[in-house]
Image 1 (cartoon, rainbow, N blue to C red):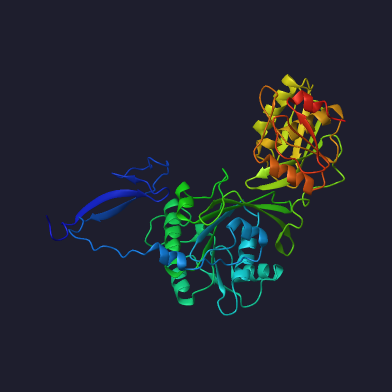
Image 2: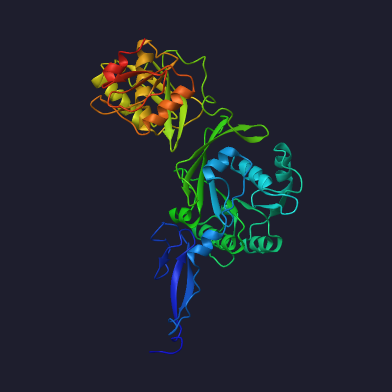
Length: 453
């Protein structure tokens, strides 16, 4: 057996600056991502393994459990709820969202809440100038010595600043602007983003300083960069909502320190992002409930039940091909509900334009809201309405049956909490019902449509 390192063997290959793929020889187009003129030489010196390797020092589980867990509060109950109580020291949090949704706003507010005059937070940006940051800080009332600003895109300089100043929290806005001198490719490319996240993760674990990375979102709705980027961080958050609306949803996609199904409800105001007051009623309007085409339902987006209003408008079409428009509800799911209404409930909507809207800018993906959508469309088409004091819960199958949904007990409790007096729910549910809540049990869609007043 060899007693020293084997002879170093150089290996020449070509690396794509756009996707990081390797190629054995140079060619004009990358075979992986089809980018032109993106391959560059990369020489790797392969060395053999050592004959003997020193064993690493292990840590007893008892010693780790003896250390008390500590989290850093963000100043927002809703944000802390999604994070599992707060930001864990040494963790890396990735925050994504559409342009203009409020990522930079919430990042600056979190840094101001986590920092203090003794140990201020570090807000690093590669997209804005100091003057732009100052204007936003004044508008958000985040002035003072709690936050120190750094306009820099070189990842080595950012890491050196972190190690020198030891801030309480590091915010990087955004990770696509960081540049690693030792990695080929322009800033924002796949190879650069992966290298930057890896470097920031290493410094976070070594120093115990939490890092909040702001990431851009692609047209498909995913954080820009490879899918493996989400596996390189500890927490992945998405900020959702209509950009021109006031309501925002902070959704936990991945969380190594808490539940991944939590959702935080926020509202965007002139002075920044705030917790939504009375979340159970924050997105309801008593004036519209009780009108034809308006139905209240309880959705369970993750672990949190929310009362939302589904609105539908069905009018005679002036065109050969009727229009179907949806805001906040999947368009394919809408087409499915229209087909079931026509086939199983005999609702004449084939010559009608149908418009669907979920009030408050919320996007519904919960199948438990199917029955509410169907009754809203049927009610608008026949000019009949569900009572303003009645909630609707249920999933609809292709044969027109009303199916039981998950977490029905939690949904019923939420319906009672927002002041509902009755609920339309599947016949198959035999669980507990809150006191004072009348139940109208239905097994088919046509039976539910018959309850319209």
